[in-house]
Length: 383
Ligand SMILES: Cc1cc2nc3c(=O)[nH]c(=O)nc-3n(C[C@H](O)[C@H](O)[C@H](O)COP(=O)(O)O)c2cc1C
Image (tube, rainbow, N blue to C red):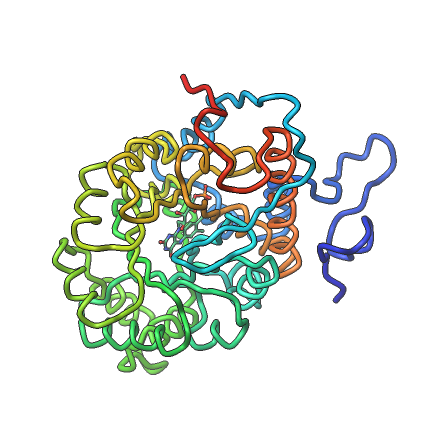
């Protein structure tokens, strides 16, 4: 299958709906993230599309993530003499070509058969980091074999610390460059409950065995596998978990799900290397504030002692500019690339990263920023 690549001329792709006759309102070649949402909606089973797209309960946080960006104004200085911009930066001392990372997103083999392998290759092609979910659908080793690009492993913590330890060691051995521990809780997604969304038995078995739960076999009934899954994960983590994690790995450690400056300060005091300001894309406890709203006070509290990242609601290059102006080292995107993966596999993810790169480049030139470190808070007017 000919897939849509960054360098292909418009209209070359088989999978992308083509412009039709006047009055034909089929989606055109994607020119923005929202176009990939429409393409994914048209292509994926409804329950899968809903799983990606919806948020918890009344989706207040989901909407707020996007709306909070839209309340911030950009005030560009004129005649800055900038005609091009260098989008490269460093994350955890590693040079990347784009300050936009792929956030850990579960279940990617349901969006496209190549799933995480396709996403890993697309991130590598864009010169950025792939945050690999522990529930991604492929093992750490399979994802590592798919691309040489930088990868961070996102850990959901098995109760059995022997399994947890082996998993971290496997990620380290496979060349992952950091561990992200996701700590936010409280998922309550109406759409998933209505759709009775659940992983098929064989997918769940592969996932659990990939984690290292080798006692799970095909001989078990679906209910037995579900019961095992329900009790396998540690939902009672406390801060001392990071002391344990630090004792078993040399990799840089990030905590994902931080919204309070007190928690950011605690993370810094424990020597964590990075903080991801996140409300899980509005998929956890509804009613939490937008990540971008909490970013400035967390950046201030951290005071440069760790790197601060953010995710949630990034849909445009101008959103990236805003987040970087407010002190984020880089942003992570979730749904934008999940939709693109569903719409068109690796080529889709490449294209969505391309579009955001072009939009960010345009925003940087328009604001006189020749490099990422030129992006300052003084460019913004906030309510
Ligand atoms: C379908 C889906 C699955 C997700 N799975 C995970 C996961 O396994 N681990 C995790 O830390 N975050 C997960 N997230 C949250 C993302 O890492 C990220 O925080 C969020 O998507 C950012 O918001 P955005 O979708 O508006 O970009 C998931 C998000 C989506 C959309």
